[in-house]
Length: 382
Image (cartoon, rainbow, N blue to C red; front, side):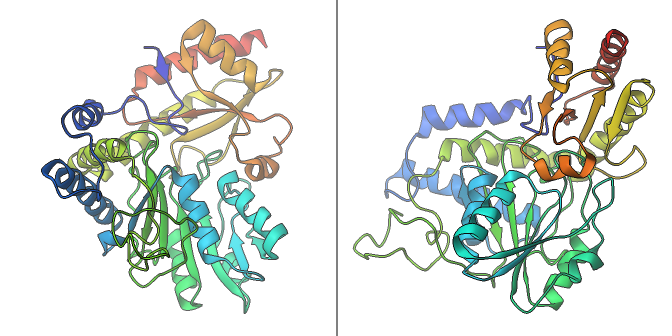
């Protein structure tokens, strides 16, 4: 099947039981949740609720009813930002945000008059918590931070930022797209009010799954209205969770697969997954830095990082690197701006982009060795 090194975009392969869970649901159950009282509908209800409980356990969130399912982390972040922010509110964010955050904030700046402050970071993309605190003012309503950059892999100090947010009574939202499933994330310990997650990356679930985990005391307005399966005569969106934020038919086949993936992660252990991926990233970084024409970006092998490495080869376009790896070596990586122009402005690659590898739990050192050998040959041609 070739060597897949684009796990920062989507994890592949999935645990075999994930596909089986989706298949079994489609064949054996196949009905909506919350739309009937017959036996199959009750089974679908239980799958959804059990998955809420697994997400709640994963993030140490204490109310499964406030685990909200969406199609992806993009929809989840839109739901949170548009549900929380009002005219003239102030938001603090990192200098590395993905367009899922940045485009939302810039649109709300234009249309709602919110103001945005970007916390500075070092050349490797790490922010100091005290620099975030210095940006707080009297109308700061929200701090939203990526847990890890999808370009550089740099880990942000979310526990320290969470403590600052709590002390100043400011909501704290963390985008865990690159870390959920591979890092220990604890909403209570880290003082996180809202987590946005996606199912198809390190959570090893299907595409079309994601959501929000919301602290019990946090409430905000829905941005969608529609059917929930209950209180159908009431003309407005209901006020109780999860129905307040969830409308329409859920992707229950995807949620069934996500449930199986979460059970797999729980059985393997976050620490085991993290340590294996961390070792592989360090191994890859060590090899890549031996190649004379390769320029690496982000934290080196000695620092904890999300499992991505961005690089360029002197004299080559990043798209050509990816093309040659795929065509000649059957190695799949990502090339371009990775939907994160802020990070590329930081490292000076906004006009060129970078090649990026994304290491997953099912990669091996042999995969990395073959990547290294291929890049040596490609760089010699440059």
